[in-house]
Amino acid sequence: MVDSRWSSASSVSPGRRRGPELERAILDAALEQLGTVGWHALTMEGVAAGAQTGKAALYRRWPSKADLVAEALRTAMPQIGDIPDCGSVREDLRLLCVRTREVMYSRGGQALWSVLHECDHAHAERFHEVISSRLQEPVRRLIGELLMRGIRRGDVRPDATGPLVVDVIPAMLMYRSKVCGSEWEDAEIAELIDGVMVPLLRV
Amino acid sequence: MVDSRWSSASSVSPGRRRGPELERAILDAALEQLGTVGWHALTMEGVAAGAQTGKAALYRRWPSKADLVAEALRTAMPQIGDIPDCGSVREDLRLLCVRTREVMYSRGGQALWSVLHECDHAHAERFHEVISSRLQEPVRRLIGELLMRGIRRGDVRPDATGPLVVDVIPAMLMYRSKVCGSEWEDAEIAELIDGVMVPLLRV
Image (cartoon, rainbow over all chains, first blue to last red; front, side):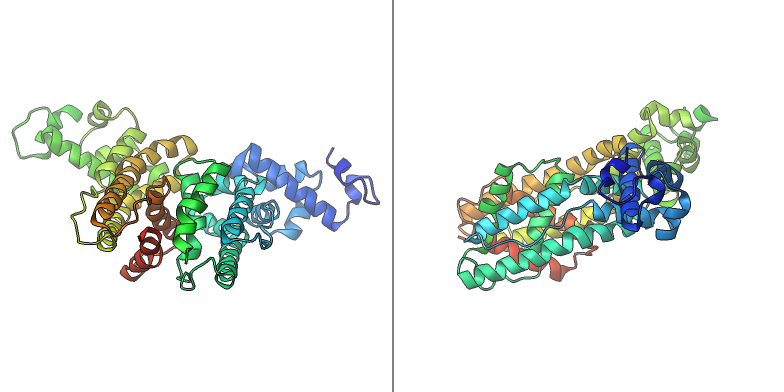
């Protein structure tokens, strides 16, 4: 069943899958296990069985369950990518919010929140690194770029470069999602842009 | 053992403590246990022993461990209280941030984050209610009042009444505290006010 996914590869038997294919099958099985049994109950044996391989194939690549899960989460979170110039800081930031929402609600993003909720402090630090590298840092960097673009364009005030300005969007997205249970519909994103960001940034 | 401890009211021995005193002793012991063994390992027996009483005294007041812990957390988080008119929205909001920080870093606030990190989803909902009633709702209400005061005073633009404006401060405090590990020193609070809130609200 798993192998039908990789049917374009040269080999049809699970035993013959090449490195990258087998790796994808293992990471996919890990994500599947996270979604069904959760972080505590996930085992290297269970993932190996799900990927139709042996435990040794897992341990050769990931020394521990946490390493495997961190990589499974990371690869299941889409990249935010660059934001093209949409003509105004308003549209640029709106698109950034939509993209960020896609990452937060991706299969990997959702799995990440569940794992963080279930794991202990030591592991949480490990998984926070995944949030940082896939979500927090790319979003901060992009917002910084969009603000500079707006300053050059003339629709962002030149002194809107304080260290906390770039955190407002991710803070709001996370706070209202996690604390208030908001789904971040398009209308709420529009309100965040027009009711908070545009007034904050205007010349 | 249980009833002899507190069945009769007017004495100095622990066994004779009145209702409210015994209640305080139990809630304090629950908080102590949370700080030492954590949510999972906390037991009604352990709390009873810590408070020098019996389990029945606990169960008479709180049907479950979650009920007891929720009340222990709630009573250990200080009330934010009202914000006097400090003469400007800048100073009003700065004081609000300082007060919110006090609640977040209070013994109850710190214990609450640990519990939320350790407990399962069903219990998390229960404890989120404590955050909501002791922190989130009072802060939202206060910020709304401070904005109205600023609009009357003339240092807040009259249309700064969008539904998300009141969430910016709690979102930033929580995001940078939980995701970025910020301690929210006074200088960072000043930056939040001067770099984000004042530009967002100015006339």
